[in-house]
Image (cartoon, rainbow, N blue to C red; front, side, top):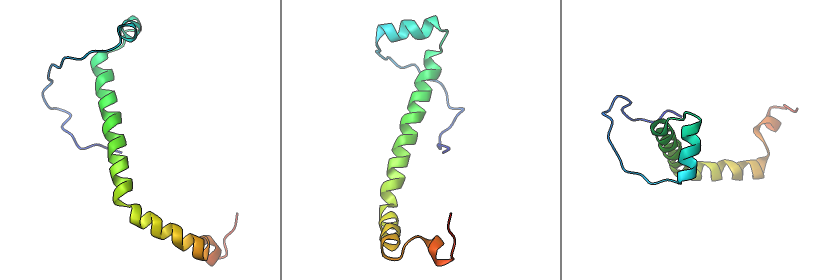
Length: 82
């Protein structure tokens, strides 16, 4: 899922607090804290977008599930079986 945001937007300083042991371990592995923070923000936003999409489409999911319960899978209508 591609998130809609300006990848070329100016960088901005932020103040964060984090577990000092984790910070030390990441730094000892030459990890980029800024990049990890951005990856975490992207993962958070992707999860929120997925939740929003599921909520917006729940009526369709419910309708499809009712149809399957009443008629069986569409593959049965065309004689397809695994």
